[in-house]
Length: 503
Picture (cartoon, rainbow, N blue to C red):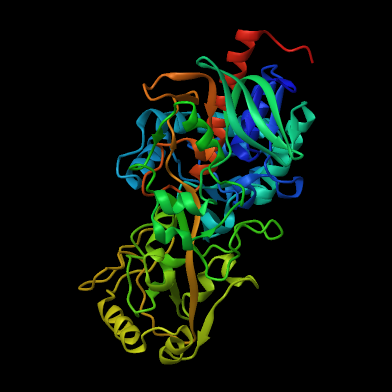
C-alpha cells in the first residue's frame, strides 16, 4: 500500500513549512517536504514578500543580536524605540478589534524573539528596515512603527536560505508533488496520498504538518467564503495555494476556525495592471502601493471612501484592499501632488508602476476617466477642510480635516501643487484569515477541540490570529513561530511513538 516511509511529512514549501521541516529534522526526524509547484516556482507566498518581520524586542542591543554586523559607530547613530511584547500584543488586539485568539496571540508574541534568533542560527540573514521604517534627523537614524528588521534580499533571500539549510541537514524535497488526502488509522495519522509524475503515491508517516497556505488562489472558494466580488481580486502570491490542505483537514474531522466563518482576508491596494498571480520573475512585492496615507484614495465616481490617515500603513493596508474591491469597477486611484511625490515609497518609482501625471486637476480627472465634476468637488471640499498644524509623516501628527466624511485624521496636506499624480489600484489578495483551529503547539484540533494525533498546521493555515486586519510583518513571524513549534511537536510525537528512523 505504501511507497516510502517518513517520520514527518510537511505539505508546502514556504517560510512556515521550511521552518517546520528544519525544526523536525533538528530533532532527529526523517522529513519530507512536498512542494506542489516546480522547482522554479518554489517558496509559496513567502517568496513574494518584502521580508519585513515583526518581533518583540526591548532595545537596540537585542536587535544587534539579530543583525550582528551593526557596528558600534552605526549603533551610536541609531534611535531604536523599544517594541515590547505588550506593544506587539496591544497592536495585534487593536487592529483585530480584540478578536485575536489570545492563546495563539500570546504564543506568537512571546516566541517571536527566540524564533528570530533561531532563524539567524539557521543561516537566515536580517537587515535593518531602513527604507520603509526609518527617517534621518540631526545625523541619526530614527526607527518607528515596531517593524525595524527585514530578511536580507526580501522573501527571495529568506526562501533561498531556508531551502539551503533544509537541504544541508538532509530534508528530502519533492517538487511537482500535490498532496491530496490524509490517511487515517482509526484516529491517528497513518499516511498521506500524493500525486506525483501522474501517479498516486501513498507515503507512510505518523505526522503531517499542513503548511500550504489558504485558498486565496482558488476563485471558487474565494467566491464561496469571501463573496462573489472576490473573483475579481488579483492573487499577489503563488498560484498553488488553492486550499488543498484545508480540504484534506476538513475531510478528517477538523473544523473551520477564524474570522466569522472565513469571511476575512489579508488584502492590499496593488497596481491595477499587476499580473493576475504572483510573477516569479518579478518577486519582492513590487506591485503594492503603500504610501496612500500621504495622499487621497478616490473612486471612479470621484469620491473618497476611507480615512487614508487613520493610522500608519502597517495597520490599515491589509483592510483597505477590500474597500477598493467594493468600489465601482474594483478600481481606485491614489492621488498625490508635487509636494508629496518625493516622499513616496520605492515601488512608485519602478518601471512597473502605472500612473497618470497632469499639470492640472481637470486634466488629471480626464486621464483617470472619473466623474470630473464630483472629483473636483471632492478635492475642493477636502482642501477647505484641511487644518493647520505641523506635518510629520513619521508620527501620527494629528494634522487632519474637519467637517468632511470620511475625515483624514493625520497627514492631511492640501492637494494644490502641480504636477499631480494618480496611481490606479485594485485589490490584491494575499491570504484568507480563516483556517484551521490549532493549539499553541500547532496541533490541529477536531470538532471537539481535541488534537488529532499526528496532524499539525502552521502559517496561513492557522485560523484565529488575524481578524479584519493585520499588523504588517506579523504573517512571516507567525509562519516561523508556528512552523518551528509544529515541526518540534511533530518530531517529538513521532519519535516517541515510533522511535528514531535509521537514516
